[in-house]
Amino acid sequence: MWLWSGEGYWIVRLLFQRALALLYLLAFLVAANQFRPLAGEDGLLPLSRYVENASFRERPSLFYFYPSDRVIAIAAWTGVGLSLLALVATPYWLPDPYATPASMALWAGLWLLYLSFVNAGQTFYGYGWESMLLETGFLAVFLGAGGVAPPFVVFVLLQWVLFRNMFGAGLIKLRGDECWRDLTCMEYHYETQPIPNPVSWFAHHRSKAFHRLETLGNHVVELAVPFLYFAPQPAAALAGVATIGFQGWLMITGNFAWLNALTIVLAIATFSDGVLSTVLPVTAPAVAPTPLYLEVAAVLVALAVVGLSVRPTMNMLSEGQVMNTSFDPLHLVNTYGAFGSITRDRYELVIEGTADEVLTDGTKWRAYEFKGKPTDPEQRPRQVAPYHLRLDWQLWFAAMSPSPYRSPWFPRLLGKLLEGDEATLDLLAENPFEEPPEYVRAIRYRYGYTTPEERDETGRWWERERVGTYVEPVSREDFEGRGRRRQRLR
Image (cartoon, rainbow, N blue to C red; front, side):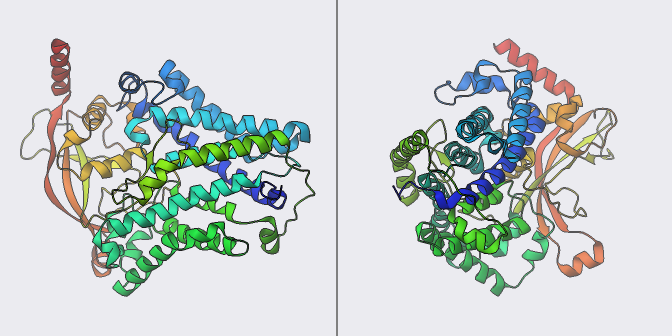
């Protein structure tokens, strides 16, 4: 049937799969490098906390049954290996009777492994792009490979993911901060976004007219363009181009992990081989019809998605819209949206330590530097995306509140620094101490960009003002005493 035939999508499938494999590779490398110090056996949010506070049915994960750093490492590096196999299109090397089953097994393995990290990662994996990667990765299982046509319905489902991502983001902006309605949000966004990049400072200093124009453009691309994803060609492809251009601008001006890159990958589903062959020097080979078992599987998945889409759609259309929410433990159909409100002031936590055994007014404090978030006012903002610095992102959220009790992992971070824990220190850009410090503290600052004139004169990218002490100086003995008190209470 024409409805299910994807004979004109062989190139689109190959391009989509390899792009998605690259993002999976990045995600598993992040897990291999960061999961254990963040959410492993002795992480900032220990894995035991996940096992104790959730059932397997609520948050299924391999680590529920094997909560060990060794299993985490095996799973992460297995994911890296499978991602590389997908990146070089290994299933396409096999004869056609075996290519599609091998492809389905490969993509299912990637999805299952990453599901384990997302469901066990707690706060450090609580981002919308985690669910989006899982939802997209699940659909990729049913695209097939080799010399057979992909099921067209799967591309419609991918367009549906893209639609909810973009349209949901547009709706939550209109319902949220009034600055989206009066077109002034972009006057604050570049300065207060989670992790600015080298271009953010320059984008911030564009004119107010420029910021109003780009805010209006944001509304058009998020609220009007998504309906064209389902239109006939070339309208759907033009909508995809607009989406890719929009996401490309966000990548140039900010560090949003792989959110923008994944949205671009999803936008590939709006093209067809006919459109791509007019701009790329590629020609699709002659393909065999989609195998019956793959067609049946794709139809069943489509029916499941229709049923699972009811709650996310109701949420998206509701006045009380909640962004970046999963409605099932497998993250099969989710609701998305970002930056419904824009902060006007940027707060940062500066963590400092001292080697002094006795604190005085003359105590010299030295700051820990992070890989992405601003600390040193003279440090130019860094480019880190699409790599995801999970600790840096959580520090941005933590700084919004003047109380450390909103972030239960933060005291453990200070304790790790006092211990000189190597795994934790690897998450930082610079450790100013050869030996663990005697005391650490956290100071809360308000940061703002310098003007062009100020930067020319001082070399600073930021000006900052101290607004309070987030955590008073604490020592190893303080943490050991708290530990003994907890033991007595048990």
